[in-house]
Image (tube, rainbow, N blue to C red; front, top):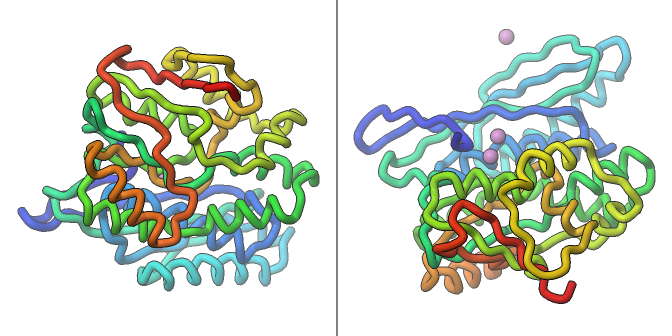
Length: 305
Ligand code: CO
Ligand code: CO
Ligand code: CO
């Protein structure tokens, strides 16, 4: 399954549609709104599309929470839509036991220029554009253990649009892309592996991550979704070297509004990385490569961690 649905209208025009919503992961309503919008737009960016319009989806406990909270959430969402130059055209809200917010997004893409999550080829380099560990830090926030700095770091990262990264990869031309979200890094690598040649070799020490996430993982602040991802995806993984248990958890940590995971031809990898860094996407790193064998495996190499 790809990140968004594609519907071809003409030979030179396809619609791209996606929807995403969830319960709050940070305390400030405005920031939650920003993150939800950045996350909803991300699937369009991952597929090489241009988002054009969006609609709000709201579940709100009218009797339990003040209306100002909802106003702030919607203001946060609109802030990101404005930054993305996407037009809010409507929405729908219901009275709900639990607060939920997200958006449906519609965009366009040239049918020949859709970037799918399949199509990585042997020799390709794998690039990740945001650090991992937001799920573990969000768990620490809920447990009132996270430092304000850690919270600020993940809010900045999760609310950052994947727009620039998407534009840069479209310009240079890549083989495959997906955004890293609920299935964690290994889960999304697995999705990419399904339609790719060979296997993946990942270098653990190269993976951008939040240091605090390692710290909180060591304290046991690991979300249930992380264990679920681990159970499901671990059979694909082969370990080389001495694994670090806390770092291993990070690899399965469900992300919200994570970065783009891109497979790009070797000779284009450095130019792509340069352009990403020039655009201020500081976390962008080559985390591994596509190898001929072992086929259908993700080899995670821990070099003296
Ligand atoms: Co996605
Ligand atoms: Co999605
Ligand atoms: Co309605």
